[in-house]
Image (cartoon, rainbow over all chains, first blue to last red; front, top):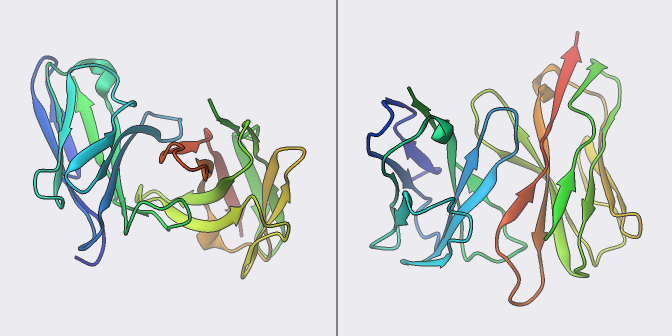
Length: 115
Length: 117
């Protein structure tokens, strides 16, 4: 695609429910990142994929959060037993190879609201 | 762990004037990259400018330039001839360039820039 696509744009759910957030990176980009941006804060790193594998998942806050990228393209961030504190914008980004000097391309994020 | 601090939650500037946004960072690494990202209401983060720590020359991109002071660990962004379209949140970010280092970006809390007509 022309850019990084994230769906849905907005998601409202109830406390305790399960949600999936999808990220479609730029075609051919091997590196994919998830960030979480709480209100009034900068984005915080969650997880980094290189191809199909999670190269760094040190930012996932707890075991309710899980992400996959089974074919090395689309990624899904999964949140179980959602809590009100999970409310945030979830941003996805991709780059060609994951090198430090590469430009990161961001999607427009998913605004998750947990009621 | 690396940290990035933006001490100005909000800044304002008159159209066509110049404004400088501040950023300091803390790291023990010698090889790293620094970035300024712009985030308009659409939420999409857009790269404004990038600086490699090993380069002494300050990066410039049209109306945007940085003042990179490696010893002071300071990385400010100067916007010249400000335009209404520059209004947005601006985030300073750090990334390790060290072999085997973290691939993640570390962001500051951001500065909200208002451009007055």
